[in-house]
Amino acid sequence: MLMFTVATAQWQNKYESKTLIEGMDTLRYRILYPKDFSEEKSYPVVLFLHGAGERGNDNERQLIHGGKFFATDYLMEKYPAIVIAPQCPTGSYWAHADVDRTSYPVKLNFIYDEGPTKPMELVIKLLDQTLNEPYSDNNRVYVTGLSMGGMGTFEILFRKPDTFAAAIPICGGGDPESVEAYASKIPLWIFHGAKDNVVNPLQSIEMVSALLKAGATPKFTLYDFANHNSWDPAFAEPDFLPWLFSNKKE
Image (tube, rainbow, N blue to C red; front, side, top):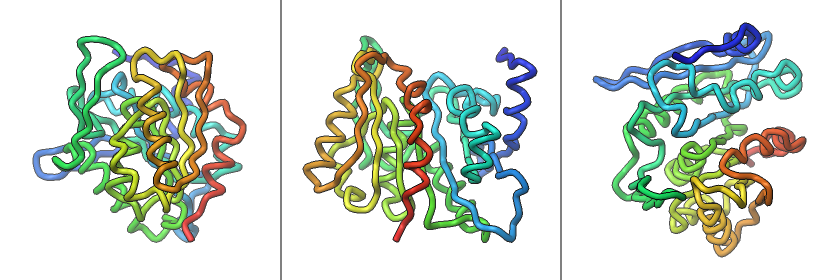
């Protein structure tokens, strides 16, 4: 059973626990509203996609990495935003891919042409519902994710190329042939660890290369010291949120 300290619970409880039910399928998610939230105001929306280790149905684990970052009092004051953190069920994935874990780094074959996974389909529905609310600023919608969530970040950009103002995929990967859909529209800052033995850093490098070939100018940070958890130094980057929120759809 996952245990949180009292101090952790204080920030975790800032996220409301909710569910989206579609037929026989359920998407559990947590949502963080800005301090002094008002439906009369307009706020940016951040979609945060967790990694494979945080899958489940407790509607808690998805906050382990990144949840506290977005719920920090100082950052909530400086960058008031609505943060959505859905939880992917065990055994499924955000991105549609064949994943071979018999050896490491894992072998990945992305199959976007077979349509989205059920969790991704529900995430898109949840995001669309949120953006239909009058308090959502549809010109400032962002997505970030780590590991499996970094893969989901790349895929949702392909599936929703006109939705996002910027994206930050961390230690993920995707189908290089898909970038044409969004390369000219969405600024990206891509992170990976050069020592990553779970998701090969070449996965991100291939996406950067494809974006460059498509005429995009992505930011790319490859940490020479980092293994798979490159999200720790990424979230510690002083420009992480300033860069993300500086982008706005024209």
